[in-house]
Image 1: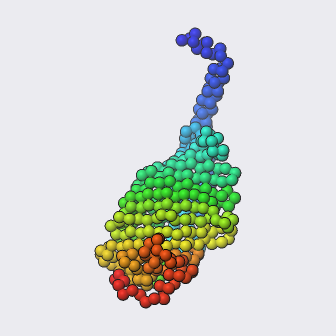
Image 2: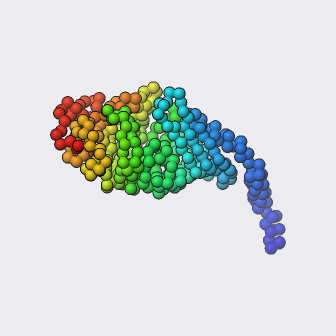
Image 3: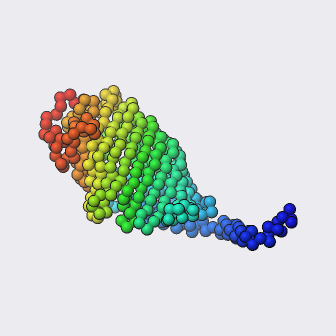
Length: 359
């Protein structure tokens, strides 16, 4: 054995490989022993808060070296900072993440022709995997959801501000314009099972008279969403196209949404051009005393058969919401228009309310 090793050592290639291997091993040991955990944690906090426009305070319980070229953070807590112009009744949002791991990927960086970072986010109900690619002309973020249990994930519920249960699968692939920081292209492809909204209070200025509505636990069934983001002819502006967005098989409510949303850019506000319809189980309405809600003009004018239809228009600063019986017939029906465009919604608003509205 000794003779074999001596014979290999006499070969120059073997000696070079051995020296490189020993140097790498020594470097890793040195890095592990001198890893400036506290300093790196401070840098991570500053960078994350800066990326969130300093609207949130970030706390990290533990940070350590991970897979040679990365770091792993545990016990991340993100608190929304209270601003002077916030409403007095507003409750700052708090998001908790069990673990975030991220590392630089040298081989993938070469293949992608740009620095690439792989990451994993443990949100309690599952692990979100993905990678981030930074190039001169574009930044790409790819995320994969695999059996994400929303009941166990406090992060998702905190971000949405409502208790949401079910299991999510799918992918999110987004391209960001590095010059403007806005979305340029992308695809969202999600599938959900047993989607359920927990008992909550919905607050919205879109609901006339009632600024808030208390909703009981509501079953929506299975969920399917396919959304594309594409650049428009206007420079620096993108459009979110809702190709498919529906819940079906729910015990209480079935929904369907279609249309597009123009994202704001260069001082222009974003604007939705979206239609929606929903089918509600009458027992759900009766048992939970929601007759007042479905007797509103927007619901009565938007009723067709067992569905209620609505259209959303205007801008994000001033969203218009009207009932539309044409939208209630589904995306294949003709004549659906955004409120400011007139058409079906405007005509229905001038008609008398249906006599068969839900009580």
